[in-house]
Each structure stands twice: as C-alpha cells, then as structure tokens.
Image 1 (tube, rainbow, N blue to C red):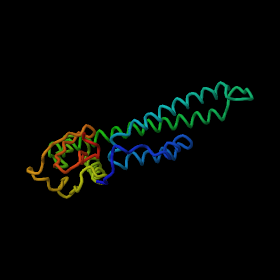
Image 2 (cartoon, rainbow, N blue to C red):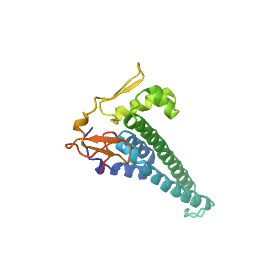
Image 3 (cartoon, helix red, strand yellow):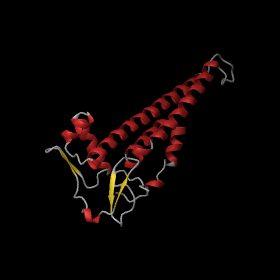
Image 4 (cartoon, rainbow, N blue to C red):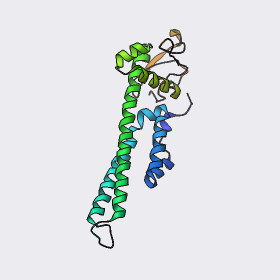
Length: 206
C-alpha cells in the first residue's frame, strides 16, 4: 500500500485544464490517471462519462452553428471553423464515453476476481476461468495487472502451477473485526491496530 488517503484523491487540475483546451492530451492523461491507481480505477468512471457528455453537447452545438452559419460573422451558408471544432468535440466526447464504458467493464471484472479470490478462496486460474467465462490468457493478464496495481498485496501469479499465490493470512486470533468493502466487494479482516481501509482497492471501509 502507498499509505495515501483514498478519500483525498481527485482529478488533478492540469488534467481538467487539458481536457478543455487540448482534449487529446487531456484524455490520455485521464486514462493514465484512472487506470494506474486501484482506487481511481474503481471509482472514477463517471468523470470520463460527464466530460464525454459535455463534449458531445458542445460538439452538437458547434456543428449545428457551423452548418447554419449562425456563428459566421460573414453570414456564409456554413462556417468551416465551427464545423471543424464541432467534429473535434464530437470525437472527444465519443472517446471519453468509450473510456468510461471500458473502465466500468474493467472494474466489473476486477470485482469478480476479488469476490472469487478473497471472499471464496478460489486461487486456481482454471477455476477462475470456469467461474468467469473469460479466456485463460485474459484472466491471467487481468490478475497480473491487479497484482501490479496492489489489489492483492504481497501476492504473485504462479503461471507454472496456474495459481494466484497469496501471502500468509493473519492468525485468526489476531482478527478482531471483519468489514465489507462496498467499492470492490472484498471482505476485509482487520486487527485492532489496522486502519479501516480496504486492503484490496484502498477505499475507506467506514
């Protein structure tokens, strides 16, 4: 774990600014921001969706203004600049909506893996593939990415045996409470000295 407070994470101002003034770079940074951190990956899909809807509305407005010539001070039948801007906004909106849908799909898959591995104790890749219906290479790649992002702290993927190898569990005598994470669905076992933060996605538990 990185020790940061997950409740204080938000979209950096420079990404917001770039999404407005130069959306291709802003979109790339938004994608990196949302998929390189386990907490952001599970909670920030709506940000992309809201920006996407805003861009689509702006694109439709600009396109309509360009086609009608209302934005052209020369009163031509159409305004090429507004048409270009409209198409760019529409393209950016479609890209951001796609990003949101893709992130939601990824988060949904990750929550299924967490439910199987953490809550049901299923660590065999073959059984995970059977339970999810995903292809073996896809499941293996997803689980390795989750491990890299810190969803399973101390775990590693043993491809030779086809297992997700988790670290030793705390002794039952040390566990004083069990809390369910509403964000990723994992059941967390905590000791008295542990902060109520999900060990798998980093979200607050209380």
